[in-house]
Amino acid sequence: MLGHSGGAVGNACETLVCRGEADRSGAKPRTYQATPTTGAAAQRAPEPAPAPSPAGSVPHQSAGQAPAAPSPGGRLGPITRPNGQKYHPRALAQLPDVEALQRLRQAQVPVLLYGPPGTGKTSLIEAAFPDLITVAGDGDTTVGDLIGEYTQASSGGYEFIYGPLVTAMQEGRALLLDDATLISPKVLAALYPAMDGRRQIQVKAHKGETITAADGFYVIAGHNPGVHGAVLTEALASRFSVQIQVGSDYDLAAALKINRTAVRIARHLAASQQAGDVGWAPQLRELIAFQKIANVLGTEAAFANLVGIAPLEDRDTVAEIVTKAIGRPVTALALGRQL
Image (cartoon, rainbow, N blue to C red; front, side, top):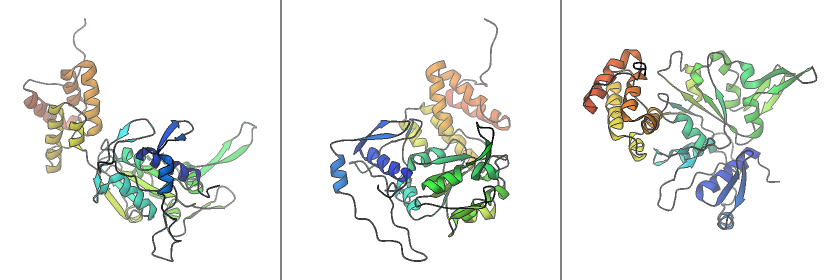
C-alpha cells in the first residue's frame, strides 16, 4: 500500500523507536505499536523530495532511510541492535555515525569500514540499518553463497534458492559484506554490476535471469587489515568511495564502568601498537569481556586472562605492562594444582 519495500518500512519504524515515537512490540517478526507521540511525528513528516535528476544527482530520500534523530539534549542515545545489545553512537563528520551512514545510503555512496576486530564496525552497521542482511566472508565464500544455487527440495527435485545479494536487491535492503577482503576477488566480481550505475546482475545459473535492485538497496563492507589473508584489492577499494577507519572508543569503555586500570592498559598498548612497538592491543570487545570475567572470577583472573589472550609474540610485553600497572606479577590464566 505504501509503495515501499518491507525493509524500508521496517527502517522507518526503527527510526520512530529510536526517537521515542513508537514502541517495538515484537522481535520475530518485528512488530511495532503506536504511542501517544506517533501522531505528532506523522504531522511533522516532510513532503516527498522531487524525483532525482539525471546523472550526478543525489537520489531522493526513501522511506526507512531517514537520519536518526538526536535526543532532546542534542545527543543521539544508545540504539538497540538486533541481538538486544546497545550501540552508543560516535562522532563522524560532525554527525552521529549512524546518521552519517544513513545519509550516505540515501546518496548511494558505498562505505568500507576498516580497523581491528572488536572495534565496533559490525555494531555500527547493525545500528544504522535495521533491515541489514549480513554475509560473513571468508576464503571459502563462493558466487553461489552470494547469488544463490540449486538445493534439493523435499519433493526430491531441485529448486533455486536466492542468495543474500539477490534478496537484498529485490527487497531494497542493506547488504553487509563482513570481512569482505577475505573473499576471493573472482567471487566479489559478481557483486560489482549491482553497485555501479546498472544496479543489475545476471543470474546465469538460473536461466540467465536479470535482477534489478529496488530502491533502498545498498552495499557496505568491513575490512580487518591485520587479519591474515585480508587483501584490499584496487578493484574492491575503487567500489567504496568512502573508507572510514574504526578504532576502539576507550572513553566509552570508561563510561561503561569498565575497570579503569584495564582501560589505561588498553590505551597504553594501543599507543604502543600505533608506534609499532607491539602488534596487539585490547579493543572494546576485549574490555567488555574483561569486566564480565572480573564480575564472575575476580579482577586478578581477568588481568591474567588479558595476558593470556594476547598473541604469543606480544604476550611477554603485555604481561610486563600489566604487571607494572597493577603492581604485582601477572601471567596467563592457567589451571593450578589439584584441589
